[in-house]
Image 1: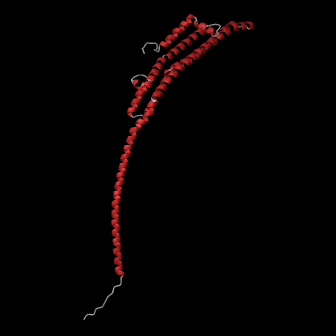
Image 2: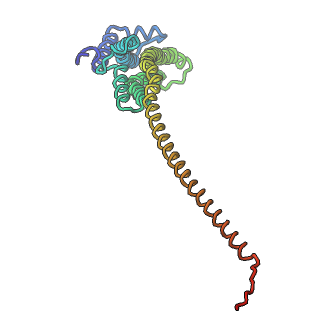
Image 3: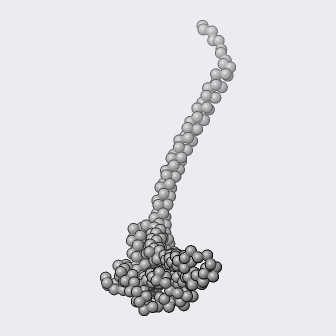
Length: 305
């Protein structure tokens, strides 16, 4: 975008002021008031309607600036859907920014879903901040209309007071009402009607643009849903392989420990059997010794000659 093209920030207010001034000078503002029912077109009402038209044109031109960006983002998203390789991460588009973050998070082993979700939230916040001034201008349109109504009614009250001139004649009062009050009331409410109608048009344009921008954000997020759905499977394979290796190593270690324990138990069992045999032999010897001591002994006397 050129620095001084129609999308420059000063273009919209300058054009709005110029066009509204031309309409005022050409009498189009007074004709508009008469068209909406104003019997007269006082200077205050025409000035307020001119200001309302200037604000309306400024707001619409500011809103229209987003249309090329919406088309560019839509085209980039369509290219990404057809072929993700056609998107360059260096581009200033929604899908390009997401692709760059997706690659960086995947290479670093981070949470790709969390990164893309944060990027989407930032884009939504950026959209709201981008049109903050536009919403303020749309809100100001009916306010200017009510200001014009108040000014017109104030002028009406002043004219009505001057017409009475301190006379209490009912016929004078009725004539003053017909001449000063009723026409000015129509003009006053005509200003509000014009402001409200233009605010509705500006709000409709704003709603269409914001819907297109949010649709682009949703479409850019949808491009990477498939990749996010496939990403856990790709990350799980190395993780499962590593886990399998760890389990195998752990089982091998446990098996070797069990084998060593089995050998030790077998060796201990052999020693235990030898000890039991030795105890049995000792018991047998003790029993024999006991039996020999308890057996009666026979002694014979031999006389010496």
